[in-house]
Length: 445
Ligand code: PA5
Image (cartoon, rainbow, N blue to C red; front, side, top):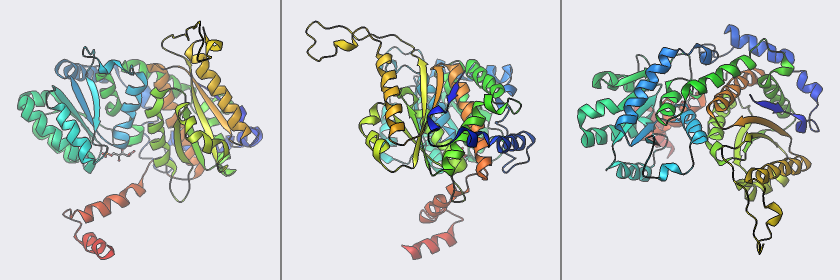
């Protein structure tokens, strides 16, 4: 379903050294499987794909249908792992332009709660003024300020515009089973709610209702998405031999590159629809591995767009980077370059070629140039942008992340560093309970 090629890293590291990780990978896989490693209370994602039931998917699809029937727009309120997975899949699978048309087959999906931009929220609420809209309030903790603030605004607007009864129908909560303000509100207001399992952390939650509900509302087949992930769960299982397990090879190769001074991994795509897959990936690897003063810095570029900006740095800047290219084998549509008799633009040498042939040559040419420039390259090929492939790709990155984090020696499933800014922000905003911190921070200003 996906293939991984590390050949173009081998001028920089040796195959032998990559394969020398076999025992460490095995140990990481055993620790994940047996729950004996760090963060072992957050391993619910490991066999999540194969444990999703038909009934659960039917429940999600029924709720999605209610929102599809009653909303022109659905706002997904969430931040980090509580929105990036849904956005990654929806943008990868959506037509880039039909959402601009008047006749829509599915509600427009918009996002909020992932920033505190006053202008963003003002403009969103203005846009929603004449729309039949619904909201999915997604927060595992139920207390994340960015999301709670956006939801407070959206809940009031939805109730004011659509009435309490309709608001109850089109507001859904996805949160903890028992704790957090989002749970209290959902129970008090009688919203339909879904639970984020205790043992699944935000950035590993795309295959829970966190990702699946918005994806289903957007009109995509969540059964196929899950089927793709199930296939990848098998392909990357602990009993698959090291050499045949793409997640094992990816985890080993990136750790070997890191050991050899390649501190930055740039995820590259040649399809603008994959932009948010890269954003999701950045969060997955950044929050999982960047700790204890260690970890590869995950960066991303969209080519060929960014070849005209970051391309220079990548070709000739500091040699601490490597690239992982996601290549999509087959396009969804066919478009050929027309012939032009006058040939004023000199492009007749491309006449009759598919646009994707040009794109693929840009990809190949760039890979060769970057390798020549001292940038090791890995290549992940997926067959197409469809539900199965994307489901498989997401699970591949999750399992590789768990293995890679354990090889690095960190707990890939916590994010203690995220708390530092929150503490300061709450102290500065005089949040009740932060009186001591408020005094201390005032003294520093
Ligand atoms: O991966 C994570 O755990 C985080 O990125 C969270 O998803 C993010 O901070 C949002 O948290 P919550 O869902 O509790 O609002």
